[in-house]
Length: 562
Image 1 (cartoon, rainbow, N blue to C red):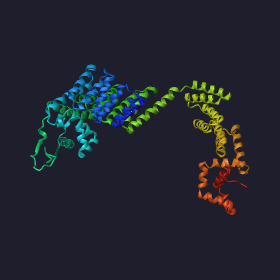
Image 2 (cartoon, rainbow, N blue to C red):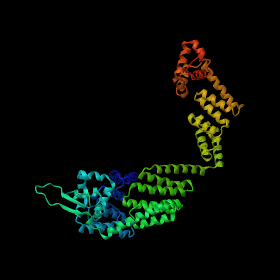
Image 3 (cartoon, rainbow, N blue to C red):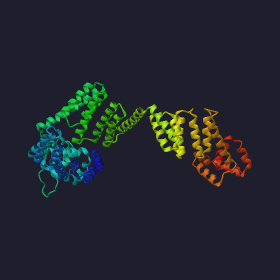
Image 4 (cartoon, helix red, strand yellow):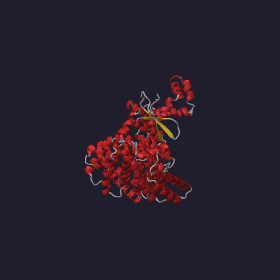
C-alpha cells in the first residue's frame, strides 16, 4: 500500500501537481513512517511549492532516519537556500559531499549556495528575494499573481532567489521587472528604451524625487558573463548538430552535441539529441546511457516533463531494437509506460501498443510446439471419454496455445463446451475451425449442433448446408439438416406447445434479421394483407423475396399458419 501511494506521488510530482504529490507521499508516510525516501520526496514537493519550512522539516527527518544518505543533505541544502539561509545550505552540501564526494547535485548545490552568499552581501536587491516573503508578496499582488501559474516565470524567480545576481540576465523580461517593482514597493513606468523609471507606489502629499535605474548599466560578474557566453556557444553547437543529423552526418552531430553538453549541463536536450543519433546508428547501449543521464539530470533541474518523457520514449525505442525474445520487451514496455506518466504523447502510446503486440506474438512463437500440442490434445481426449469435461478443456486449451492452427483442438474443445452448456464459447471455437480450414466438415457439424441447441434452426440449417458443399455425403451433416427440417415444419404446422412458441418468439425477437423484417413498412403491410386482404396476399405469394421473409417469421414462431 505504501509503495502504491509512493508511485502515485511520484507520478503527480512528475506532472507538476505538487499538492497532490504531497497528499500521496503523506499517505505513504502514514503507512511506512520509517521510510526515509518518502520524507525526501515530500521535501522536494514542498520545496516546489515554495513551502520551505515544511521542506526543511522533512529534509531533517530524512537525515535523522538515514544519516549516511547523501540525497538527504541535498534536500536540506535546497530548503535552506529557499529560506535564504546560505551558510546553513553550504554546511549541508559539504556534509553530503563528505558522504558522496562525486555527487554532481551536491556540487552544483554548493556552488549555488556559495554564489548566493556572496551576492547577498553585494547585491542591493538581495533583501527583496529573501525566503517566503518574496512568494507571499507576488501572490498578494493581482498583477504578479497570474504569473505564478506560468512555469517558466516561477523557474526564473527561483533562479534569481538562489542567486540575486541572476537578475541581470532577466531585466528585459517585463514580468520580472513588474515582480521587482512589487518586491521593492515601487512602480515601473516610462519609455521603452534601455533606461527604466521607477516611481514610488504610494502617492504622497509632496512628490518625492524620481529614481532612475539604468538596467544596462548593471554589469554582470565575470562568472555570469562566462555562463551566458557558454550557453550561447552551446546553442550554436546544438544547431550545427541538428544540421549534421539531418544530413546523416552522425559522427559530426555527436561531436557537436557533446561540445554543447560540455559548455552547458543545464539543458538535457543535448543529451536527448545525442541519444537520437546513437539510436539511428544502432548504438543502442550508448543511446540508453544518454537517456538515463537525461532523465536523472532533468529531474535534478526540474526540467519540462515533456523532455523527461522524450528521453524515456527514446530509451524505450532502443530497448525494442535490442529485444531478441518476448521477455526483452518487458523493460521497453515499462519504460514507455513511465514516459506516458510524464506526458501522454500519441507517438509514445503507439510505440507502447506496438511493443505489447510484438511481445505477444513472440510469446506465441516461443510457445509453439506441435509435439507437445498433440500430447495435450490426447490428454484432453482421455478426460473427454471419462466425461471430465473441465479437465479436458484445460488440456485442449494448452494444445491450442502450443499450436494455434490445429483445427482439431478447437473442434474438440467446442464439443466440451457444448457438453458443459457453454454454448457461446463452443460456437466461437466451431467458427474458428471453419476460419482456419473451410473444408473441415467437423467444424460445420459442431457449429450446426450448437445452433440447434440454441434453437436457431434456420441458422443451423444454413450451417449444415454449407458443410454439405464440401462433403455432400457426410451423414452427420445430413442428419443435422433432417432435424432442422423437422423443427421448422413443426412450427409451420403450428404444432408447438405454448411454452415452445413463447420461447421461440422471445429468441427470434433478438435476431437482427427478424427485427429488420418486422420494422420494414412494406412487410408490415404484407402481414396485414395476409390477415385482411386474401387477394392482395395471393399477389404477395408470387414474390420470392417476400415469401422467404414470411418463411423466416413462420420458422421463428412470429407468424403461425392455421
